[in-house]
Image 1 (tube, rainbow, N blue to C red):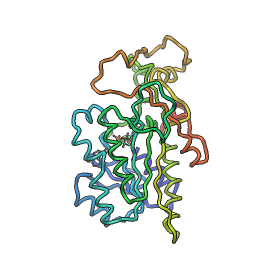
Image 2 (image 1 turned 90 degrees about the vertical axis):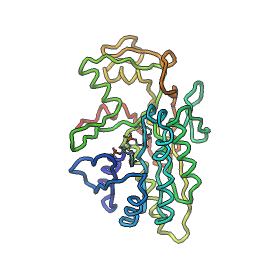
Image 3 (image 1 turned 90 degrees about the horizontal axis):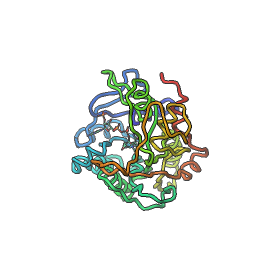
Length: 304
Ligand SMILES: NC(=O)c1ccc[n+]([C@@H]2O[C@H](COP(=O)([O-])OP(=O)(O)OC[C@H]3O[C@@H](n4cnc5c(N)ncnc54)[C@H](OP(=O)(O)O)[C@@H]3O)[C@@H](O)[C@H]2O)c1
């Protein structure tokens, strides 16, 4: 996500200087933006970057985002997912900087039945990953920085290929690859998400920052504390995503490449929220347009 966000923002806002950070390896060599190394546990490195670049906005996409890793390493996870060192240093060096936090739909329990989640619903996470995101949200909400907290659903977008050829790709591409290679997968029919596309996330971030940066120039500045659910226009079960990849109808019992199964019948190493269908009406009203059906948008976007 972080790489795509830097690409899209640097292309859409030519007057902004966008700087990406990487931890284990840089992104593509032909990036439109500068990349610098960053370990979020390294006080000196963070301070040096803040002092050198003096960013108006800091977007925290970094995370330990594997729910299994989080479950097995709860304290390591908190150090990255709840960015207390970073926020302390921002307060010290750049108190007027705006902070954007990537949280998750997994702050909600997903235990059915419930209406589509809205921002007014209380977070009730059921795994360590979700708890770490709630802790991060709390930290950011309590900090004096202007802030934007995003709760994205499952994120879809183009694959990200590192210079060493290593590829990160989204769940739909995993399904497509399985279908292409004949690797038959079982997909939950009772696990629901509102997938969101990277272009929509970037649009919400871009619009918020445009407004916030203009706001900082005014003499009577209004503090900003925004929180948005970010789910796309259409909800899908994992099974329905598989059917869509195969061009089959939602009511189909059979699929050429995938089998249907139920999450509730499986013994799992980590509790997975079952039904995270959410309303993003607040973000849509803010953006002034509907968010896309991310599955359709991804499948209709030619890969480069
Ligand atoms: N992907 C989804 O479907 C989804 C859904 C909801 C919410 N989110 C949230 O949205 C954000 C972006 O998601 P994503 O899928 O792009 O996550 P991701 O692929 O797991 O990327 C997170 C990045 O964090 C960096 N990182 C890890 N440890 C670090 C450290 N000590 N210091 C600095 N950076 C460190 C890693 O950088 P390197 O690669 O350089 O090592 C990694 O690429 C995350 O906060 C995630 O929790 C994601």
